[in-house]
Image 1 (cartoon, rainbow, N blue to C red):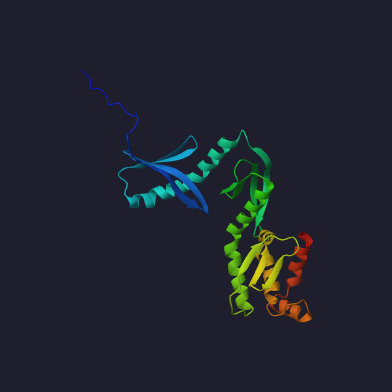
Image 2 (cartoon, helix red, strand yellow):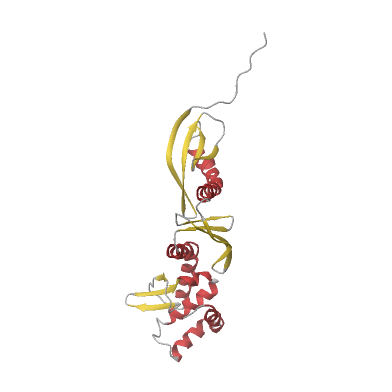
Length: 249
């Protein structure tokens, strides 16, 4: 009699399951379930809106760090976007697609969705922004600008404090105001800049920084003040005209 072939496939017994694991990518937390099975290789899929990661039981913690986590990072963002799309596609009203957001002068494509959540995803140089109402949308965009622009602008601010010979600590604070681009406060000592400045290139933002740092020497807009500004930034007028043409004071 011929030998019977062993049947392949079928369910592989689950050894261990860890729910609600999380990983942070670009400041956003993604969640998934880890399922340990007697399999040869890792696999990733989604079921009922939950991302599942199949991990071979033989993998040690070192294997997980070197192979599984990069594998998760590579696929989880795209999978999460697909889940969000399928979950809300019947209820989402498309607010505006193929729009653009400027961050530090760089142009990014952005899609806006009116949704039941307020959250954004960044994938393949495209922003996917979900919002509940316009107020939350504004707050979300401010958060987005800070996440992508704060570290670079802080380095520039510290650079100009050093160039302009300010040898004491001056905090930099971002706020949203209608009446000014920047403000030098003395009690408490801090320099405030407008959120919308983060949409401009770093050189334009630095021109406002120089203006406000100069107020640490001269509190008014006298001739002495402008001498300080133009001493450190001779082409200040170019950036000032650029800002005045596009931002309402």
